[in-house]
Image (cartoon, rainbow, N blue to C red):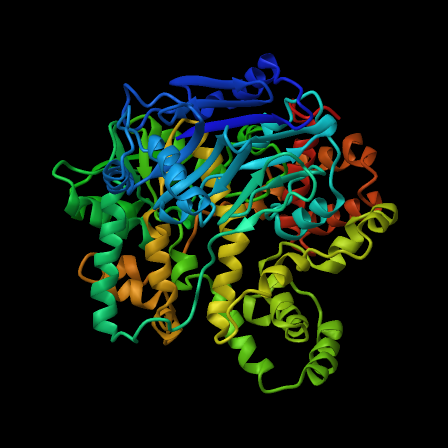
Length: 632
């Protein structure tokens, strides 16, 4: 895995090597093995390398035969050997054995449509000298990140992380109000926004072409998930057999490596399935690792141990303390913008443990999105059944009224917390699903923000993120609708971002076979009834792996990678929370209503309300304001 960055000066100003070097150095952790540059007048490309394949001749940037095409690349193309053979037969000559070189020759052969032939995870920048064209592309699911910005004085810059872009002297640290609303709605900032104005994430499955002008630069979609019954319906038995075969192929192509390779093993269904298939495909014992928490309510280590014993893996488990609060500020530096998914803490610790033994690790990410494993998916289906029987006008009157009068009782069992249910039943489908995925309500954010900041939002609400994707979402089944939205928002902006930053902090490459795009396309075409049946999410996935895993592993209650934030904030993090609210940094932003901040804290500390998600987001936002890389 690697880090890439670059500069294109549209106004014919030569690229300054010292600036490009500074941008590249900020990504050293992504590629400590080597670095390289290409500068040709107004274009500058830089690369930091973590050597995985072709250790001796894979140095980047990489060129075609006459050096008219050059590329810097972050990721892996798993079908590069087949593509290499096809390109050689067409007359192309290769100077290395790396997958990166396939990109430049594929560009010569197929131009921008070359990305449709790549099977893998990638973000790359390619310069075509003859066309005076910079081409940026990101993989279909958003496994690898890519940021870009049009700065002052005609400079277009890009990088694997925000920290590369902020190194450019023309960059201005101007916070985007809409991104702040999105952040406090979801706990992260969904694509394409970043915390800064005029800096964007290239969305998954999109590319950019930049030539002689920076006017009207717009990402172009080249891939989307197609849900629905696009293939002949399979019986449960046939689907289960084919599922294992297809996932086995996705795992197999991800075992190519010239460095030590292993896997994360949480003891959950997805990582356990990946490890089971790895054990079948590898002659030597699979290297696995997991972390054990001191709190038994969050500890999955015994389940991981069961799988490790069954498949005789070379298993490493490390006990960690839940309350490693020193990581809080470090996580902010890794993400370069506010990020409030508290599971980033154990994810960081897991990646640190894995890197002690391997350079590449396979993970089980993507199983819940692919196979409807989240509770929110099932809740959405049930709500849609009610919506379909009542007109919107009646729902608004009936459920909207009930939502207003029903008390908010966060401390009660889930089945008694009807207020949110009533409120969401009065909404349209996209708004309802968005509310389930949000960490705060619109009314809470109205309390949180100052009057002056709300005027900057001009009525914008974070729900617009989901509504924008809902336009393209499948409408024939509510389960597919919910899965589509998660794969467009939650998966790339939260799950994959979290894993990328945590792994790259330790120069560890993580591969995700369940998000192989060919496998994703096949699963998306399956009937929704095979994904959710008889109250069981991931139904066909669990059925398929019954010969491989015990029912104790397959059908236990989902735990996730959680930590007890609510208790922390009333206990060991209490002082930090109070200092955060009192700190002048939050007040100086003019974003927040200080009186409301105090109320949120008091309500949480006295147990009247559970505001843990909001308060954790505030702590991470305040940490972002203090981040050394942010010049306020």
